[in-house]
Image (cartoon, rainbow, N blue to C red; front, side, top):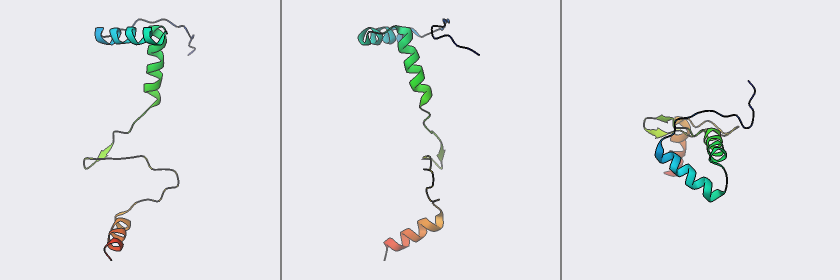
Length: 82
């Protein structure tokens, strides 16, 4: 699929959102379409993890980071108590 940079489409936008977009676009001196595109792009680029386990938020592991096991947690807990 090919996209033209100025492709037009029709969207239904809530009145309060449209008012906020118009206000912000005037402040930033950009078109409402440009502002919406930029905001959508930023929102789509961020993919925060909302995963939880037992009510605790999960965070992504860093590449090469050691795996935290219960054995490791217990060992570290026991070392701290010495």
